[in-house]
Length: 358
Image 1 (tube, rainbow, N blue to C red):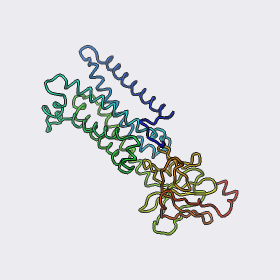
Image 2: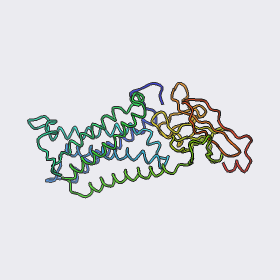
Image 3: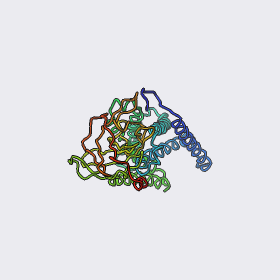
């Protein structure tokens, strides 16, 4: 979180993250070029420029697959949350890898003719009715343009300017870019490179991305708690000891937004499950330094009023709770964002058996 906008908001963890990813990317490119140079010799030798084009293209595809897998993996296991924390920096790195790939290819294959490289890209030697002659370069260009829009709007300034909902919708175009990338490779590299390793790797990557999204989607149908009725004045959401101390649980209300329940200190509070930053799942977070902390990017809110600690100004809706015996009841009607609500507390101290169950 930051109260003012900076061009690149680095902290210690992000610097380490970025340095590791940059180092691994450069090592991959260098290793690919060196290995290919050693393998392909004499009559089979490949120019260094072509090897660089291939290396940056493969790097961009690998990074894109990693980026698309991070989201569903964090829904499957919270252990992946630290990787999600800096995914936007990884996305910008992926765009530059793709841009270098496209720039080198455009210059190498189009800079020596009488026409400009861009004229040759869009017109002249394409066969739209032929698989081998299909203009795979244009599909790569479409993917690159989408990735450019996403990279250029990745900063939190654009998130606030466009509003989180519109910003998130815009960045969902990554799946369209991914489709163009797959077509770019299928109608391009796979037409000239007949070795089964490339096709196998591409299919395995696509299947992995698809499978992880299916698994994470199915997980959404198994919430930790399920409320049956949204029009009831109060909904029974479980026992007090169903809620772990300083950790979130999610309650699903029919036809309404999910609610994040937090047990902290001596009481229980309820907030919207949607973080005001990037719609992260607050109910999958925990209490850190006395505040509800989003597992995606660390945005924080006071549990009893849904307000971010000063000087931050983000606010989310709150809900009323009450405890009858050992049952926790929720009023399903949300309060306006930032409305203070007194945490629900037991009418008496729990017994030693109950404490042992916590």
